[in-house]
Image (cartoon, rainbow, N blue to C red; front, side, top):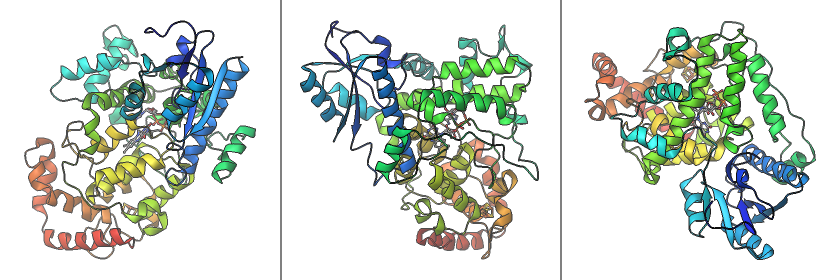
Amino acid sequence: MGSSGAKGRILYLPFDHLHRKHGVLKHLQKDDVILLVESERMADASKFHPVRLYFLISSARHFAEELRAEGLTVEYIKAPTTLDGISVAKKKHGIRNVVAAHQSSYRLQSALDSIGTTFVENDFFLTSRELFNSWAESQKSHLMENFYRKQRVRLGILMEGSQPVGGQWNFDAENRDPLPKGHVAAPYLEHRADAIDIEVAQELGIAAPAEWATTRAGAQRVLKHFLDNHFENFGRFEDAMNSADWAVHHSLISPYLNNGLLHPTEVITAALKKFEGGSIPIASCEAFIRQIIGWREYINGMYWYLGEGYKAENQLQATRPLLPLFNNSSKTEMNCVRSIVSDVEKRSWVHHIPRLMVLSNLALIAGVDPQAYLEWMRNQFIDASDWVMVPNVIGMGVHADGGRMMTKPYAAGGAYISRMSDYCKGCSFDPKKRTGNDACPFTTLYWDFLDRNYDEFAGNHRMAQQLAGLKRLSDLGETRERAREVLKGLSAGTI
Ligand SMILES: Cc1cc2nc3c(=O)[nH]c(=O)nc-3n(C[C@H](O)[C@H](O)[C@H](O)COP(=O)(O)OP(=O)(O)OC[C@H]3O[C@@H](n4cnc5c(N)ncnc54)[C@H](O)[C@@H]3O)c2cc1C
Ligand code: SF4
């Protein structure tokens, strides 16, 4: 705990460490002042999605109230910056020592470093940065699957001795089903707004959204609702998208895991308990556990391992300004994109496949500037934090890191979207066509992307099949021509 002494400390609590038993609050002592700062920078309503701000601010204000109700000394300060807020609290209480858990972004970490903060462990993850680095340094390529298997063994999760439960590490081959015809969305929880929620929503000029909880009790209800109602189908339909079902059996817990209202340990414990009850297929359980102990931990580990400069990478030299359709769903005729961006406009959230295979895929194959796209996603999504957004966008989404994280880009044409969703039925484009006025922009741009970046991918054996497909195209000239039109239309907001 450093030399901060037993009395007179400010425990700085960022808005993503809202847990009574983790982070700096684990080290709470009598006479400590707990400080939360609502900085103008993080609450900038002209920049961030109002639902995102509502969630973050209302959760923090609820948490501060809960701490006060325990009889603790809490300061909740609005200030231009975090450091300004800390200095107001220092003066008010005549305290010099500031203690915090390691922060979840380079920016906040260095801001707090600059004022001599004492740091304690950030235990909002299951893997320390040191442990992850030692794994990463021992690897030639950083395959998530290899990390995940190590995690299963290290944490003793879904293991029978040294073997994985069910005889396989990964059941994804069973997990790629589209939804059956006539699928009806199973309901998700709605949350009733209380006085704090209403106050925050009014400040932001919106009605309090019912989709998101803003307390730990609410977050626990979301987890239970998922386990009781959606867990069983999670794996099988993990990749499916549907215009009438905004969540498709996903858990909706990322906002709470990311702001501290839920901890990964309790999520895993509850999921495994449910699985032991016998009603959950191993393919669903394994897929969900993989997201929590695999993907989430891997992404956080890679964020710190890859370094602060990683977010500026642009290996494919993509320079197209952000497409108008990202900020306005009416600026496109593409049914899939219009529907998904309009979901983001409503709820500040869509699940993994729309993020990866529609939004990021489009940014990738249209050659959108990765940093402009990253900025858009970070501003729009309820669960966006630097540690999770940067590797997911730069590495997984738009392959701007030249393959440091993923061995090949997630580029796909309309056939993938057509197979995994019902969007194409209501679209004026044809997913099978790459040329002509009704050609699907995804299909045209997919081939054009491979063509434009041929030299970059030529040495990558995992791209060999796709490049061989490109070489077989008899209408490459027309496809290129159509791609020019599509790119022009996308940039003008007319396609
Ligand atoms: C381009 C892109 C951007 C993304 N940006 C974010 C982001 O800003 N914040 C965020 O939390 N997730 C992000 N993700 C990961 C993932 O899409 C979301 O975590 C997930 O959609 C959240 O919904 P859910 O809670 O229902 O997740 P579920 O599908 O139910 O999965 C359970 C949990 O697993 C974890 N998880 C799964 N995949 C990932 C992943 N790739 N990275 C980190 N955690 C993961 C999340 O904590 C999630 O809550 C991004 C993915 C992509 C491709
Ligand atoms: S045809 Fe293409 S643009 Fe239209 S919904 Fe299908 S994938 Fe999207």
